[in-house]
Length: 288
Image (spheres, rainbow, N blue to C red):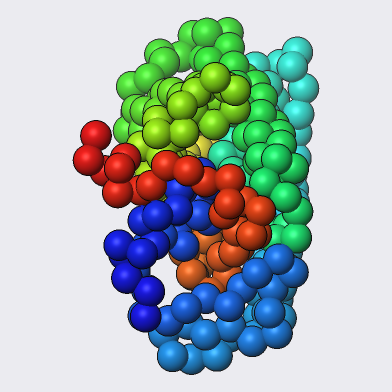
């Protein structure tokens, strides 16, 4: 069994390389293109299982987006920037697309295309995060502008507090990652130091994003189903039924993405060329 001392002679320059440096009970046999059978905790997992779970996660993610469109069109008035109430509807749609669906795909992007080289994977990862940032910024603008036009106070609810916290740490994570992993002049040592925070921070942001969406759905259901101080939410009308299912499928999507990104058997194994390029050890970065 490979020891951590032996593994530390390689540099962790990507999330998958970091994972390969961690002590494990069984050696991963995943490489470019995946192997036909993978060992995880002593139990065989076929490469087809990854593809099946991945396909299911995409179907669930797309279903969440479709249900959100149906919900907002049928029960919340549809979409349009001219009217404040319909302008708001861009907020849940764009945040679900950005911080749930696209974000989920971005954190598993290194496992989506195991045969691609690292520069191409970095490009795909960066494009997905850029798209996520655009959708998130537009969705936040929609709700803030809606509040101002409708004379509603901003940032008073728990949902808004969690949302701003999530958006803030995501923005700083995004800026820091651009510098640490895409800026050509950065030293490999600093990349090795930043990588664990980048990987674990990404998972934390994704988890908080899901919580933010769930609290936002609950808040909007309560407001939209309250007339003259009386709520019909307890009667589970169709609007609440739709929104509840959106929340359930968001959780299911998050579970699938979480499994795909944390199951070491599905990790992309760095190619021989990538391993040879590494010159700074993980142990060195830990001592700094």
